Amino acid sequence: MSTRSSERGNQDVVEEKGDSASAGHEEGPSALSVLTPAVADRIRRHLLRWYDAHRRPLPWRGEQDPYRIWVAEVMLQQTRVETAVPYYRRWLERFPTLEDLAAASDEEVLKIWEGLGYYSRPLRLLQAARVVKESYGGELPRSLEELRRLPGVGPYTAGAVGSIAFGLPVAAVDGNVRRVLTRCFHPLSPGPRQIEALARALVDPRRPGDFNQALMEVGSTLCRPRAPFCTACPLSGACGARRGGGVPQAVSPAAARRVRKVEEVVLVAVWERAGGAAFLFRRRPARGLLGGLWEFPGAELGAGADPLSAAEAVLGALGLNGSASPFPLPPLAHAFTHRKVLYHPFLWRVLPGSEEIPARWVEEGRVEEELILPAAQKRILSLAREALVRGT
DNA sequence: GAATCGTGGTA
DNA sequence: TTACCAAGATT
Image (cartoon, rainbow, N blue to C red; front, side):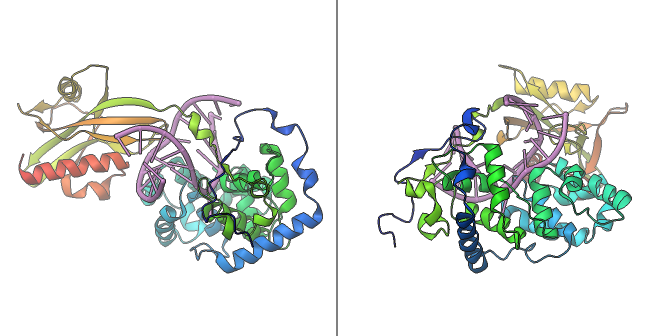
């Protein structure tokens, strides 16, 4: 067939307008008008044939239980497939059925989710499981509208669960689908509404779940944001970007994101008792960043502030009596979505004060089983343990 | 509509 | 090292 292109079709890069960037996208020739029944049929056949031959063997593929499909879809929100797989297995081992989940606590679901990020997801999954148990007799509702009302279920997840678990002929538009369809219908630049309409019109009513997954699979494995594998793509014959001589480079709305840079001082307070050392932790507020998770006490560092003095202030606020020599651990950087934090941890041997404090002592060897920690705090914990072993 | 919410992989 | 990015949802 085509011999003109290298495997990486990025030599003729065209500007691809972001979906959310500007408002003029619903104007101009409708992408839907070029989607004749014959074109739609051809796309379905090519896509599904490719999917049947090339789909990855993922643990949720072939699952019949709607609950399990739902769990997978929530885990996959803004999360790579490879990252989600081990969490998915552990989750189902611990909560095999929707009823098991509905009976769980916030702490239990967070513990399984620990390290996966976006921690409101498991909490909403739990809320929704209870709603399903109370209002739907323990079975997920089978309509798009009812699914959509469940906590943590938005347009994408409702479409995915509806089509995959229940065979509803509905669209499931994620980032992959947006990118694939934008390229396919280049240079018409369909906006968000048109993409939804295209996806709805395209879904194969006989195999809606497979069709939606096929579109996403093409997007994630072939029609990647950069350096897509056009020569292997089942849609290359129908692709407007390909026909136009260049594959649009994806421009993500993430490019406009503002990342705030902050520095924080962290107090790793160590209480050396007869039975061994203990660390002091406090719980983060239930809402907001890392809501409900635990951390070493700390404080934001003002511009030009001295980390050691700031650590001293944290120590005082907790009513602790510190030894004379705090030990500075190596600073470490951690990037969140909208924040980049440089942590300045200090290991400080202390004796607890007499007052009640909003924090909790945990034996060094029991931290993981007692608490749910964000990734950055685990890194600090590792540094602290190393320092203790070295005897500093 | 814009901002917020994590983490680890990749170029 | 920095920046981008991933099967989005909520406020």
